[in-house]
Amino acid sequence: MLVVSRKKGEAIVINDDIEIIVSEIKGSQVKLGVQTSKKNKVYRKELYLKIKQANESSVNFDPSDIGDLKVKMEKTDGRSTNREGND
Image 1 (cartoon, one colour):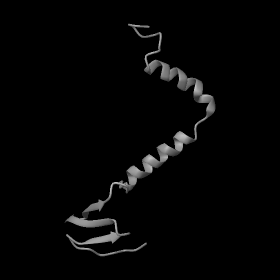
Image 2 (tube, rainbow, N blue to C red; image 1 turned 180 degrees about the vertical axis):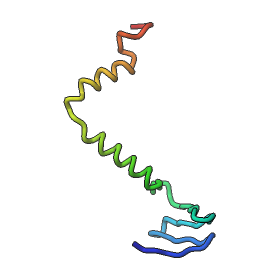
Image 3 (cartoon, rainbow, N blue to C red; image 1 turned 90 degrees about the horizontal axis):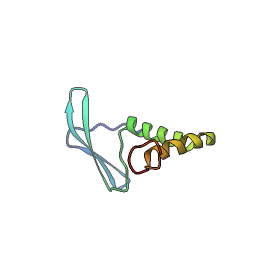
Image 4 (cartoon, helix red, strand yellow; image 1 turned 135 degrees about the vertical axis):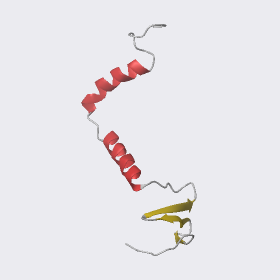
């Protein structure tokens, strides 16, 4: 891991297209600004880990759950016979 000391207003550059700027320092909290193109997705690590976990769990599903999924989808897409109205 590369550790770099920076002061408020200073920055580091990664791969010519990512710039990380120290925008504010208050006590033990440091606010960073990230400037990059839209092709680079930037997430806080805790959010990235949740997204990654959700993606992995959606890929690793039990095929026997498809019957339950079909019932749930029918209840939400207007084909359910349990709804009042135009059935």
